[in-house]
Image 1: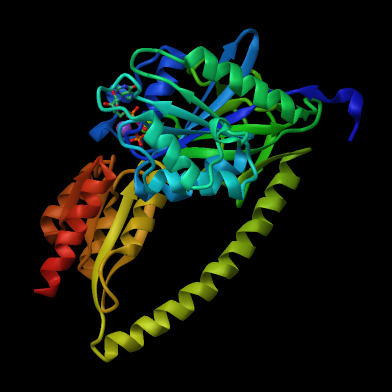
Image 2: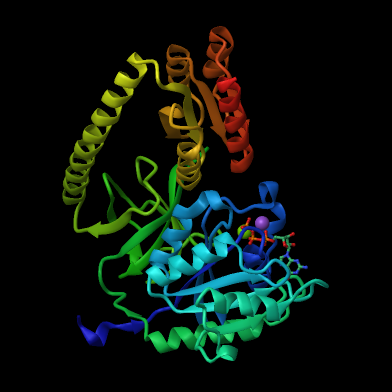
Length: 405
Ligand code: GTP
Ligand code: MG
Ligand code: NA
């Protein structure tokens, strides 16, 4: 570690908490935007990554969803952040995903700041919430502990400056440093297939500086940074540590949570990706073999009924949340079986596969292309469209219940 090259880097702050407690609204008031108002079903379904400047100091925020389906995203947010803001609504109090958020922050050994939100509500009861926090081992200052609890109203913009000051204070105590002169390393926060421009990935740069033209490898995929945009959609040439950027130039949609590395040349990047691909193939083959065999035996014995599903979605994070929720549905002898999944529009191949296995096609925030639609009509394949995860899950649960009857 070459100390003369180390510079202070902005803190990465993850905002976590129970569904609808006001995480996105808090970021909206900090950023002077209106993201929350435009969300389908009023719930956040991705990790959002933003950077703001407070008194000439930068802070990077990760907005995570509070709905129970998104545990993996909250865990990912906690893994890459330096500070956790846990938003608790003063009327609703400590709820299951509040506890989960506290656990994620603790597991990641991160300092916690409590934002006690919605204090403008007539039925707000800050004292009761503080009591609940203490009961959950969150020892806030008033109770002799060292965890800061800031009463705020995202709606009225109250307590926000104080909260930001505390974030900077907590970050300063951590003495966060990185070397911007190294080749970049980072982590994929979210990834999707853009309709016109292909795969795009939001990267949080952790060390070094990511630059245009860099040869990169992300898990089993290698490519080159061909375009880079900041959180406001503005083209940038480079991204120093703690900066979130969306990049183009990967040939496929990478997996959220995978690490990004810059390598010296294209060939080395390709070789490293190939090695990773072979390793992952080995792992899935082993897993697939076991579960298919067991499944086959059970089906011979007539003990398992299944609802076959082809899942196509727009972004990795949603796909992962949907898969997680689907796997919990049903009962021991009645399960959802994912026969194909992918990012992007529903294709003719998806429909063929669904027809062959009697599956339904779930299209989450995507459409079928023309050929797929014609094929679906011809084969009588059911394509169901969703843009809200819990509605999708409710429907599939209802379908499973129907199969039992
Ligand atoms: P998820 O991401 O879906 O978990 O929700 P969230 O925690 O991001 O909450 P969101 O910002 O979507 O806010 C949920 C609802 O609470 C919205 O209707 C907001 O307008 C409202 N809300 C947020 N903050 C406040 C506040 O300080 N006071 C009041 N009265 N309402 C608020
Ligand atoms: Mg939200
Ligand atoms: Na919400």
